[in-house]
Amino acid sequence: MKSHLGSRLAQIVPTLLLVSVLVFCLQQLMPGDPAVVLAGEERGDPQVLAQIRAELWLDRSLPVQYLHWIGNVLRGNLGQSWHIRQPVAQLIAEKLPVTLQLGAMAFVIAVAIGVPMGVIAAVHRNRFWDYVANAIGLAGLSTPTFWLGIMLILLLSVDLGWLPPSGYVSLTEDWVQSLATTIMPAFVLGNAIAAILMRHTRSAMLTALDQDYVRTARAKGLTEWRVLIWHALRNALMPVITLGALELGTLLSGAVLTEQVFSIPGFGKMVVDAVFNRDYPVVQGVVLVTAFLYVVLNLLADMLYVIVNPRLRGS
Image (tube, rainbow, N blue to C red; front, side, top):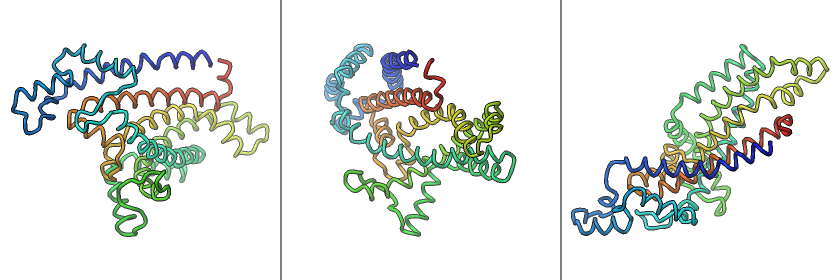
């Protein structure tokens, strides 16, 4: 297992380098000229456009632009936003805690709903509770996030007045108000992921319940609860952990529609604004940070495999 984790750690640098090349090359395919966007009312002045291109290295060849950018990244400098003239690292530091909080809350909600529902559906296969869990899961997968967000705002904020309809308050400023402003968007994000986790947990549990070790555990006289949790669920969690790591990475990369509906100033909104403003340094910085989070989450998933399945500790 140590050699496996070591190989995964060794893959981090080449993976991030490949991501940096891809994002740098693909964003060049975006229509429009960043210099024209930044010039504003002076976009018709050739001298202004030439000066902007020179300042931003846009008048150099693509390989030179990439080497200049990646060289700064390796020194810890993600560059400066072309649109608002602030360091990209500072912008990410401001938005990342928001996205981390929202993503973590959504993931906790998804796991708390999806995994138990999957276990219940598997235990009561082809019976009432199985049909109920599958119906709820199908509804969660089919419901658009923006529609669910609007309906929750109308019900819980406008009609009942229980929660604020939009906005964000930092945990360090007021943790109670912070939870109040993020619980609805977190539920909207976690709803669809809960449905996915439920279906995968059900499938993995059905496979585990048919294995010989489960029948052996029951033959030894163990309680059904211990058989389900300690034996079946522990082995069924392997594919669920992999899926959970991927879904958590998706949450941390930013949920554009949900953040727009609830006016949450996270990664998603920042990326959308950066794309519309041709703010390449911000897009590049966010993609690199997101790729790093994905790699770290997959590494943590490998470590969780060992905790869940001790047989892997010697491999």
